[in-house]
Image 1 (cartoon, rainbow over the protein chains, first blue to last red):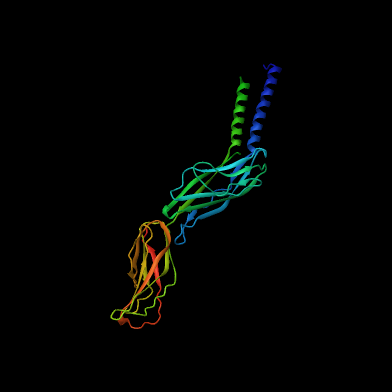
Image 2 (cartoon, rainbow over the protein chains, first blue to last red):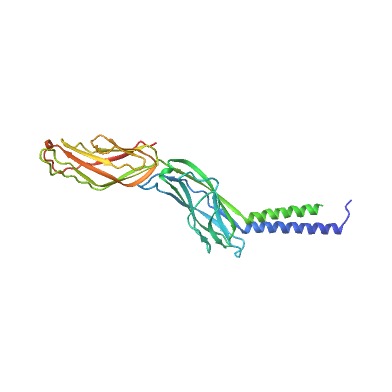
Length: 159
Length: 161
């Protein structure tokens, strides 16, 4: 037999409203800010050199990133880092073109510590720009078999 | 009690979601490799003419040192060989002397022929340019007068590991 309890019902209603509010707030916050990439670049292969000079760099500009920030009054920046150091005598340089109103730091040698790539990102609607990787090797690096590194991009508050 | 748990759970979800929003991440896998590279080049257009002698001796040898050479290798113990496109006329000897880059060994002035000979050895993981390249032409008196002729000298980098 069910007993009508007006006070208990009100509490349940209030609780549900709180829960829905918090969840919607969280979903709204995550949906408003995002960072993604178009995929991974093709392998960077160094295969030649001009006699007397170091091996010619391998370059890939085929991928892009897309970024949106939540609040134009809260600038963000994009950093990147490697999961492991590059082999001796080699460098992996990255250059992110800036999205609207942001500033690119320019070419940056990637390392296992985060490096700023683009700062003052304020666009609240989705914007896409190019990513350029340059792989360099000195003659002393020798032959390097096919290897890979994971590059992690992070969108953080700036400054 | 249920109300408290519900609010706590929602709060936790909100916190996690907010944290995720605060530091968005994306990843790319970058694959790379360096192949074996061995390159050599030479610069200069040497010309050698023998036109005198000390009486009683063979014609005086001439040298040309206007040429240079350059090398890039990312391998170890590479070597440079040199060979001629055709044998020299009887009584004439064309020799070459390649200066060695750091850590390598030059064979010094070495007579060239249609068969490849070692000129520089033990070249390991380096790039160097502007290295000296000297040619010398020797002739015996018996060689006689030799009209202007040319030979192509082919330098090859080989043997790296």
